[in-house]
Image (cartoon, rainbow, N blue to C red; front, side):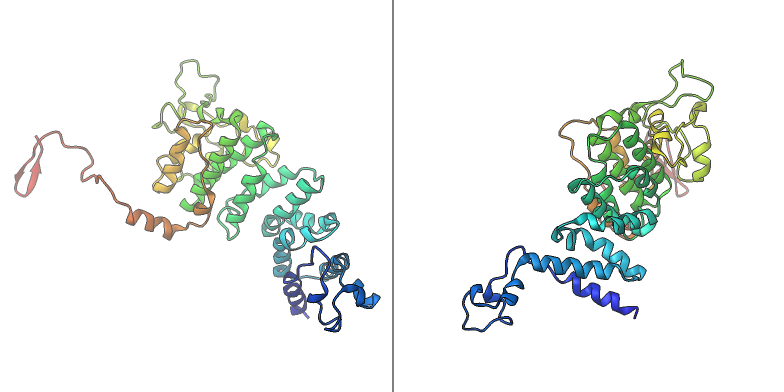
Length: 357
């Protein structure tokens, strides 16, 4: 029946095998109350107290369940539960590599839920997974960063990109893709993308040149010094902002004929040419209509140091449009602009209108 795998999964997820042999005092169903030690038990009962026997039966039950046809909802639930409920208690976690790798290869929600289990197998059990970061690069999409699992995905993505052994071209490609997604995403997702990009830049100083590098004009190098950088000229906008279409902004030249060499549709981060580009998207987002987005984007122009703290992802990953609006409504505003320009003198009333000197 379709409900049977779900019931078996509920039962197995509630079971944890013991780490040591079970004492006789906790096995009253196997012995007489007058027996005090395991030596007084029959041989068949003593075997049931061994923690190795419990682990073996635990593994057999899980492998039997995973061999059954599973509904999509149950399959996704098991992928999310394997890293904490199964892998720490089995003697050979690599036996579950095929299941986790299959979920990662499917893409979508299954791939997001497989990330943690696959990372544990790679980090602790020496699993070799070719092109892991190339597949991870393909998972960084607008849908993944605004879907129901975006908090989990953001945390895992930051963990995977925290290794200092990653090459600069790889981390630069992730930062560039996150910045491009933030350019067209809703305010909650845009703030989360910028926070991820900021934390990656903070972890990898070698790619911070993306912040200050100017875009070269389409007809050649900028020999007149007209190209602006993000930190030097905050008001300069190199390309279109969120009102433009994503495809058009990816291919259109920027300010003063500057063209972005980054290839947003390239599946291979090594060929995306991210290191040849700059973060002009962040400069555009510094004038975003949502203060939560513009405030995060403004951090890119601040001084960077060894003591610079990372941005906490949990509040941003749990935020939505309503919560961001509530934050702005309860914020105390010190200065409110009442006119487009600051008056230069004292105005007099004439026919009910103010006359400015």
